[in-house]
Length: 153
Image (tube, rainbow, N blue to C red; front, side, top):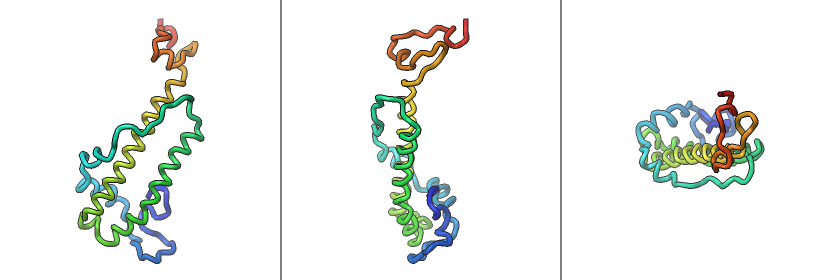
């Protein structure tokens, strides 16, 4: 919802399905998640893996492309959210609403996990200290940094 014009009510846009114009954002992301989404159900949807082995330092373009793909994916669920809301699913805690929100929380958890793993993998192509030492050389034991590389004695 955060990257659409419909992030907090359908707004002043063509609305042939008569979706709500009320602010629904906080209730959907706050109270509903607190009351109906269970960590175990989310965990079952967040399987191991998802990241790719890196063979180079990621460019900003590659990172933005990955995040953009995720955000595009998330926008594909906005209409379904409004349909569930229109049927009272969030007010009643319907099974469809619970499954929908649990899946969206899992989507976000996977994306966050994947970005953290990418950042970790990507960091091995960086250098630290002075003179610079490649992180991957420290990780593999090729170089053992001394305190002087980081301004120490």
